[in-house]
Structure formats: C-alpha cells, structure tokens
Length: 173
Image (cartoon, rainbow, N blue to C red; front, side, top):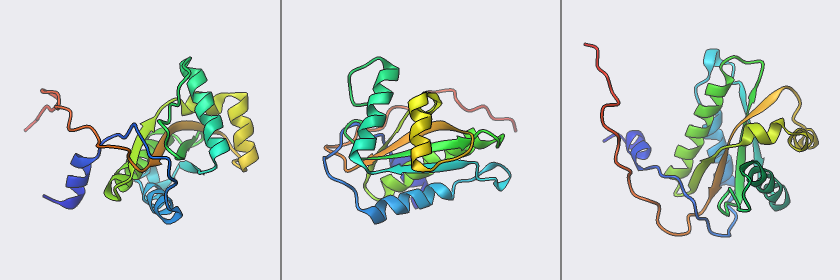
C-alpha cells in the first residue's frame, strides 16, 4: 500500500501527552505541511498561530474549558497548540483551514507525534479576550477560529481503529 494512504489509515487522535516539549524543528515541519494544504483558488485563506508558551497555552485551555462549562484541560496536557484561523474575507477559508488541520495531524502522525483536533476556536477568538490575544500576538485582519491542532509525545498507546460505518459510499456508474 502507498505510504501516504497507510499514514492516513494509521493516524489516531491522541488524548494523553507526556510533559515534554517537542523539538522546534518538528513543530516547524508539521506547520510547513499545514501550509501546503490545498486551498480554494490558491488563496491560502488560513493562518496558523503556533503556541509553545505555557502561559498562553494555559490561557487558551482555560478559555476553551469555560466555553464547555467544564473544569478540565481540553488540550489533554499537550504542550503545543497550533491554532488555525480563517480569513473571513476568503469564501473558501473554512474549508482551507480544515485541510490545514488535516495535513498537520497527518504530518505529526508520520513523525510519531500525537495530535488531536480540538474545537471551540471559533468561540474563543470571537470573544473579547480572544481578539485581544490575537492583537497582542500581532494578528491583524478579520479572522475566525477553525480549530486547535494539539501536539505532543503520546503518553501510552493510541486507540485502535474504530469500525467504519457501513453504507457511506454511493456509486454512480
């Protein structure tokens, strides 16, 4: 089987991470893969905010948990959060951002790094606190959250394959 297809079939979400920072070059390689995701009309309507600063990571975790009305770490202890934002002025940017997320999760898996897509980025960055954080970081423009790609070294085995639902393909020959 083709190694790209095999990587797609092998990727799993990681929900328990070691307390160890990833190497900068590994994070950069994963981001690079995300930047090469397909985009509508080549407009590349998604950006990535790479967070390795523990204080900012914990701030985002708290914001995310508050949206869920829960007192947990929605990032499962992952030390790296790659926030994907979409340019509201690019019609296809929500899809572009989703492809960026997928590419980054596949790249992480290929390197033996755990990842998981965490939602609620839209709500986080629609908030006053989220907009202030983007401004502080230097992100300007009309952006909306697509998702968080959390990264880290898995702490234990990842779950096996979940059985695929039947009757999800319709052929028209």
